Structure formats: C-alpha cells, structure tokens
Image 1 (cartoon, rainbow, N blue to C red):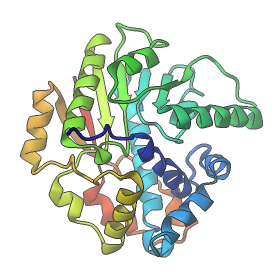
Image 2: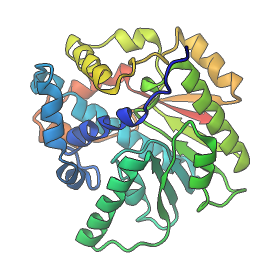
Image 3: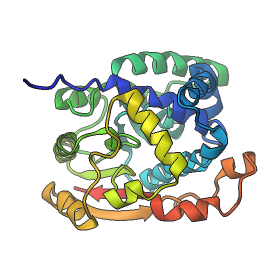
Image 4: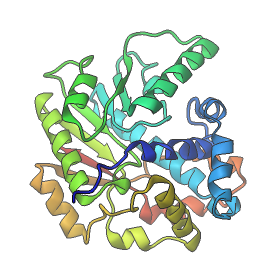
Length: 291
C-alpha cells in the first residue's frame, strides 16, 4: 500500500518560529511580523511542549539573521532584477527589496500562510504609508508543483534572467523531493533565459549532526511537529552534492553567510558574545547555482 502524500502545510508552522527569532534583528518589518503572527506565543508553546530552555537556543537569532541578510546580499550582487522566492514564510523580503523600484519580486508559499501574509502586508503598507508600485507580488504555489510555480511567475518577464530563492525548506524534504525541486528550478530558469538559484539549504550528513545537543533536541521537536524527518535530503558527502548540482546542469559557487553579512544586529540586541557568529561560521554556507 502506498504512503499518503506528505502534508507540506505542516512545514509552514515553523515560519512563526523563524519570525520569533528575527524580531531581535534589524531586518525590515521583522518586529511587526512577530507581533502580528503571535510568534512569541507560538514559540513558547513550541518549546514548552518538550521542556526546551530558550536560553540554550538563543544562537538561532544571529544564525537566522545571517541567513536572511546573506541572501539579500547575493540577490543584489547577481545584478538580476526578477526574483521568485519559494516557501517564503513570513520573511517579507520581497516587500523590503521592492522599495527599490528596479526589482520585481514574487513571494510564494502554500495557501493558508499566503492568505495570512497578504493581510499582514496590507497592515504594514498602511502603517508605514508604503505605496504599491506593482513590483511586489504574493502567490500561492507549492515548490513541487511546476504548474503552480509557472502561474506565480506570470507578473515577471520571460526572456529576462531570474533569481530563484528558498531558505529553510530542503531540510524538510526527502531526497526524491529534493530532486523534484531542483528539476523545477532548472526548468524555470531555462524558460527565463538563465539565472541563478540562491539557497542555504544544502548540507552533508556530517554537517547535519555536527551541532550542539540543544540544537539536536530542537530539531527533534521540529520533526515531531512537522512529521518530517529532518535532513533526509542531506548528502552523503560533498562529492555527492557536487554531482547532484552537475546532474541538473548547475555551476555551483559556495559562499559564507557571515562574510556576506558584515553586521549582525541581534548579537548586540541580545547581549551575545561577539565571537558567536565567528564560531558558527563553518556551518553557515549559501550556494549560488548558475544555470
């Protein structure tokens, strides 16, 4: 008997956990997002369910800040003005980046989360008197459904290169889903005449287990909530990862998130050790995959 199809909506619950940590940074709209989504309550319910100590997990604040900011940096360095973000959660990176009218940005995610985010964007636009210049779009799309992704891309101009972004997604996927995602990304980039895929989501199995006991417990709780085995899509080795990129026709360049992020505001805001980011540096990579 075949297994039931995975419920990808269960992955979406982690978006509020990310929103909780980002509120300690200077990421645009992060504090508004945390307040509106009830991120504090969601986080407390999350850790109380398994007796986790939030002080043991505070390093996630600069880690998630670096991840967000490094992607922004690399989008700008690409020189490409059209962006699709898959599984965007509550980041609102598109809303922030399209204040520069040069960039057209599509944020996509599953239906329930996208409905909530659309309302949130309306509130933020009203609060800060932000004009809608027509360059920021929000769409419903499952990253594994190519037809939904193509529909999400209708506001963009085919024949002009595209940046595709995702963060915090692949670690919830199986190896088969990882391949489906890579195939979808490659096909879309081909349809737009090329571009890059920017993501911090790839990892080897050695990297996946080389974390603190507290972070291992945290991941176990996430596994229980999402009903997804964490890092099933991790590669056996760096060589296997590079073969995967080559198989899908990508030229890979790996960057350091911390090097792309000169200032981590959450370190100061939370009174953390300045050396925290440097100690985490070896495990914080982001890939730029050129089609």
